[in-house]
Image (cartoon, rainbow, N blue to C red):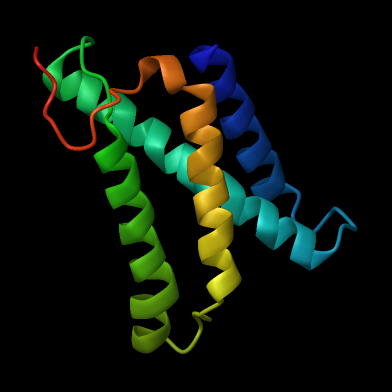
Length: 122
């Protein structure tokens, strides 16, 4: 199931990125969908990187998912708007990031280490 989830998220994110201007969907819809897809895509890439580093027995834990959510929220909604005039802070994006984290946890629940912050025994 994880393999199909990866393919679905990557294809959906790529198609949204490529056809953003060609589609006549509401920009609000596109932005919300981008924010929802951001965390599953980042968490999938992080999971793949950790498995390459620590081996395929590695299981991501809840603490790492929470840390990633908090880090992305702080970077994109607090820090980048201060640094750049082009970045806009939108508190609702944090809700969409959280929704994306929940989607990732729901789909990968069997592959998640249920401990909050313990390291994985390899």
